Image (cartoon, rainbow, N blue to C red; front, side, top):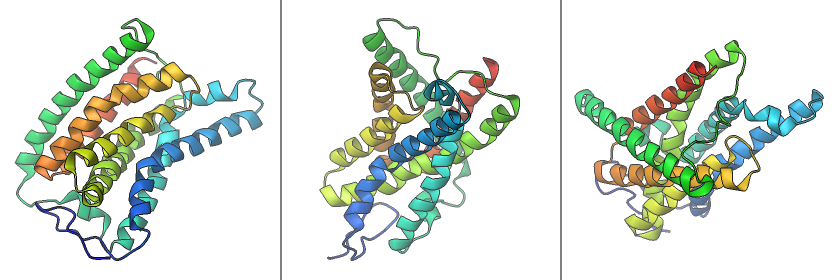
Length: 255
């Protein structure tokens, strides 16, 4: 199998002669969804052992820790995939010295784009599925103060370090190499990024799961498109961190 240039404009990564390479790339698209299900099931099982009559409902509010555990597992799996490619984890970031100002500006406008596009999508999908602009509050349930503090620190940090790196830093350029089509790579990575949200929290309610999926599609596709144009992952990661931080702050304020 010949080596293939993964990105023409900056990273100069190559595809190694490894028969499992394609499988790792496509597995990365579903990896986080599976991890959310696994760790969601762990919380459900734990509450069942503790005697809860509704363990699935009891586990819902612990979604930040469901995500944190999945993020930690994602990091180690993704790092192992990159090692098989012969490159370190940080290679995805393509950090450029002296570009702090550019990163800051891009991060700010990405946050603006994220809140506008993400907000419109949330309410539009909500109205389409529920017939109202009043959105579900499943993710805004009371948890202990110590848990809120940990979630405030760990959820946005771990999510920022692995979520967009998985779909946009790792999968997207490799899908481009496999398919030869940038638009198809963006769609595949974007749909996978959006789809993972159906399992966070673990709620077996089809309209709610569909709402979670549809709500994130526009922003996920936009981020993939932006990355393929700029080849800069760091501003996307920082914007993602700030948006996730806002989510947990909102949870704190609603307690």
